[in-house]
Amino acid sequence: MGVVDNRTTQKVGENIAMFGIKTADTVTPSDVGATLKSALESELKNRGFVGGAGGDAVIVRLGYFSNTFVNRGVVNEANASMDLEVSIVRRGGAIPYRKYVTGRAHDTFALASRSNAQHMLDAAMRDAVSKLFADPDFTNTLTKA
Image (spheres, rainbow, N blue to C red):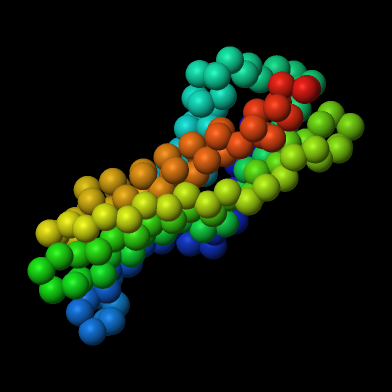
């Protein structure tokens, strides 16, 4: 399992005040790629896939991961998304599986807080991982190792 974080910044969100004025960025000290890798490895293990030397490699490229809070007056509207390119690479270099997966989350909050930002980012990541494992081509390709 390999995860490549292609993002050029640790920024994972922004706050937009009324009238579209950007007020702040949300930056994480966490290693987003490592968190994503852990989530994927846990899901693989939970489904009975065990990595071993010489097997197929799952390569995930993280292209986008962000949350935006927009102040709508009484409430804050939050949208988070994650974009991944997922490939399964055989020992000889063949790539029998390559797809783009997008995770999304949307909610409203009274307050644009750090915990709400984390909630939204986690939800977008869960959505992306869920969509990947719901794809029968992904799991069938892994099974045909």
